[in-house]
Length: 326
Ligand code: SF4
Figure 1 (spheres, rainbow, N blue to C red):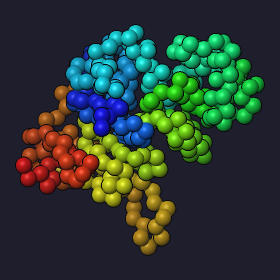
Figure 2 (figure 1 turned 90 degrees about the horizontal axis):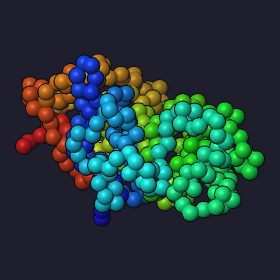
Figure 3 (figure 1 turned 90 degrees about the vertical axis):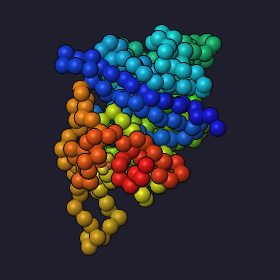
Figure 4 (figure 1 turned 45 degrees about the horizontal axis):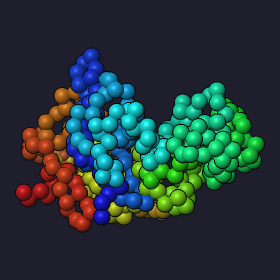
């Protein structure tokens, strides 16, 4: 079955005064129709740049896609200009940003903003666009949607604004929604509501979701499949149960050990472990494995030879020299 989105060998680099930052460096990620894929990793691992590269939402320059293909329904998006991607954005691929206040236009009502997106991509009258907008606001559970449609972004709370962003991203019924840390700016109870809403909308509308997050708890709750990124590379990929049941890359193991457990009694509770050190600077990154300076299993080969991503079980791939017989 052809994947809905199939990214191969993606490299997105940034030119800075200090040199070229290899923020995304040879990433392969695919998403099937109707699937929820979580891309996880700490700040600076390249997950957001990967997501934003798909729709050319990074500033170019200084950013540039220097290699790779981004096949969406068989069409390569990588060579398209930002202008050419206008037909794909919102209509085929929706994007939900971290902080809605910076993505919503403060001088337009939310109704005008959602309706504008609809009218740009579909042959609907002003009245039909307004009706569809109210319907979308009801779907994302905005109370009194018919009245709130005339309100401005600053008249909504943070959680309600994120619901508006979801309504806007889904208004044209895209086949794929990319959500970049959609709950980071919200408090914990609202975070859970927004994630539930996203799952509910995914099921109602039958779309695929690519969820970018740094939180393994969110991954466990949400994902069907998981891609773990580190320093601009994919280091592990597996179905969610397999990843949590059999985490194989030392970095993934460290991420999982850092999740608080409330299901264990006091006798079985262990100390939470942080992963020591920090992500390497991606201007002239170290040769070999980029995790080597933080890895307690590092061997001499690790600083000499880059580990390749290899299959260790059906659908489970990792890039590490541990157990590599080849
Ligand atoms: Fe650790 Fe080596 Fe595996 Fe990298 S390749 S994660 S340094 S064991």
